[in-house]
Image 1 (cartoon, helix red, strand yellow):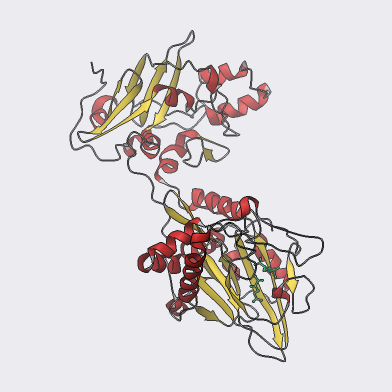
Image 2 (tube, rainbow, N blue to C red; image 1 turned 90 degrees about the horizontal axis):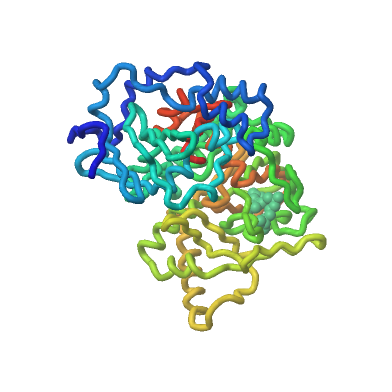
Amino acid sequence: MWRTSTCLRSNAPKRAVNRSSRALFTKGLGSSPPNVRACLSHPKCAHSTSTLSRWVSGAAALRPQSNPEGSSAARDLPVSRIDDRKVVIGWDTHTWTRYHHIWLRDHCRCSQCFHPVTKQRLVNTFEIPPEIKPVNVESKTDGLEVTWPSSQPHTSFYPWSWLQENSYDPPMHQTPPTEKILWGSKIQQSPPTVTFEEAMLEDDRGVFKWLSNIDKFGFSFITDVPPTPEATEELSRRIGFIRETQYGTFWDFTSDLAKGDTAYTTLALGAHTDTTYFTDPCGLQLFHLLSHTDGTGGATLLVDGFYVASILKELHPRAYELLSTVPVPAHAAGEPSALYTPSMGGSPVLKHEGGQLVQVRWNNDDRSVMRNLEPGLVEEWYDAIRLWQKFLTSSDSEYWVQLSPGTSVVVDNHRVLHGRSAFSGKRRMCGAYIGVDEYRSRLAVLAERFAPDAVVRDTTPYASVNGRSVWNPAL
Ligand SMILES: C[N+](C)(C)CCCC[C@H](N)C(=O)O
Ligand SMILES: O=C(O)CCC(=O)C(=O)O
């Protein structure tokens, strides 16, 4: 038996979010909605009344006002009905998604169930009856309103765009991951670049451009950087706090073996990613060549590991499979006070999540004994890394660039391999590591501000407290 609140127009748009109604949302105090009052007595609500009153100024609009214009927009609304275990939503005559009752109740984002400031769950998931079932569902202008059975009726609201983004039965249109542009040596014709001035802009637009470069290409140059360690450290900190390691915090190094690593020599270093010996390899690596006198060489090598992996996958799928499955142990043992090895005996060269390549982890110099290889795979694995090395070092993949004082480069250490040619003379390089989560968080906050996705755009007007929508898809 269907209980629908409105008829369904067959040509309703895929994303049946009616933006015109956004103007209907009032942002402001209004009366304190019941759920905030309920929060005052909520056992987990530890805030003082004054703090809560500040919530009211923000939380009051956590739900849109109903559409006073009445039914004109109603015809665009999805239909909704209550099934035995799920709520069914009809977006158009061909597109239906279902949401378990328990799932919906657990994801209520009213200020009684979800802390509007801290964005943490307040509802006790484990007190929700497993057989919970709504007493009513209603398609409102910008979302679904669900009324739950309880001594005090509890109403939840779910924005249409959020329901679409988080659909799972079946999954609908989801925001595609940011585009990665794979590159080979021809990137030298137009490498991603920002200026120091842009990167230092107070409003962070320049940092967003810089990190968007890295997100898309896996690296970015920064030009016109004052050739000092101080300016380079200040630049590094524009991304986030620096990740300290056994090499220090902000490093300023030369070929004096000050640290027990071949980076502190004049030797050539083949294409590699750093810190393969950490359970969580560093995210970004910034380099700035401060000086090189009385000698030659020391050119910088950049290779797009995602590009090379795509070629290997296409031409040698078995080799790709071995690099994606065989764990590679690693170590950093050059400092007497340190002996780093990753947990779980290392990770494969090519790490995947949901079938997507998400990380390249390769440093043949730092690789430890291959103690995890099945006997029958030993020679095949060596054939595979030989193919990997062949494509890594091909003229089509290698991008050689001679850095000079004033031009820094930042690489995504989870994607782009770097190296250098041997050199003579006095060469001074400085830089820093940034943690992968610090980098991803900084980019996410900037994207929230400068390139919000549909759910953030749709819900910010009425569901933001301290500048962040409780419906942000990252939560
Ligand atoms: C960058 N800095 C010169 C400080 C350290 C270099 C460490 C290189 C190490 N073999 C690795 O691959 O992690
Ligand atoms: O000295 C350089 O140019 C790079 C050194 C290096 O590869 C590293 O520090 O990981």
